[in-house]
Length: 394
Ligand code: LRH
Ligand code: MN
Image (cartoon, rainbow, N blue to C red; front, top):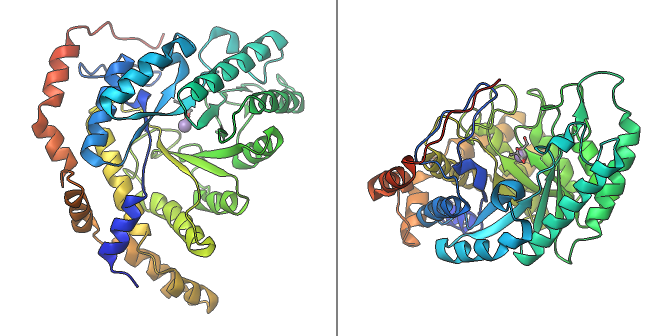
């Protein structure tokens, strides 16, 4: 059995996590948004900040883009993205169409009773697929706010049929190697039914769409009592797990920083992935992504913290002895089996991770190095002057 240090280094060599452009911008809740002078507004600032996090951690080479927020001119913005990508050392990652903000989506997008709106939504996804092709991005990541707020106001089966039609039409536009990621969410902003509410609906929609569609698991999109790693185990077995949006929560889709509330949850998810790799002989092809909104924490510091915690939890899960675990599960020796996971989770992997960073000319403590870099002071001075008025709930 290779040493802990060796297994941690090997695991980290293969671990990349994509950052969300919107995680660097000012975000809030319906009760308000607290502005940070250093927050990124332009796509140049988002790439610059993501470039800082990648330069300090070596683990986040791609930036997820939200079409409406980052490419308001659509495919016309591709050249600028390529320029910024080369300048900041971060590639454009998953492309996220926005099918929830425009006024026309009040009663849904793919599920809207109005065929004109459904066509407009399909066109926006088609434009997003074209943007992904132009940027050589593999994934088009689909989340739908579609649903209803009151019983009887929506024909759920009719909307299901419309979704299948539009997902198939979107899938038909994909180039070889591209993927459609279908994200589910049980509620919010819809509070009676959501058209893609759980993993089963997302899986069936992805299957109906076509062979290049997969399911995206946002860790914040589950009822508190749901066993997320069991869903992950099933999606792996079905060959339908496309990726994750990692964040943490205490109550609902709180979008807090990964591992801040329940680090053992993320460890158990990573364990299912390592166990699948042990059983199949290869790591599954999954897109690890962050989807958080940093309403109070410094945005760049929260991202560095997130990447470092993700590395720690992934490294801990890589230490599980799968042969001993399989033996304990077979007996079954419950206490020993559980103990094997708990031992791995309790292992302090930070010294090995510091060595891994040093060995790759990365700072052993990325957060400390960021704080000493002066980058935050510089962008606060550069960006602070433009702060516009505070948005209010009503
Ligand atoms: C919806 C969601 C989705 C994104 C958005 C920013 O809650 O998780 O993935 O498009 O957050
Ligand atoms: Mn998400």
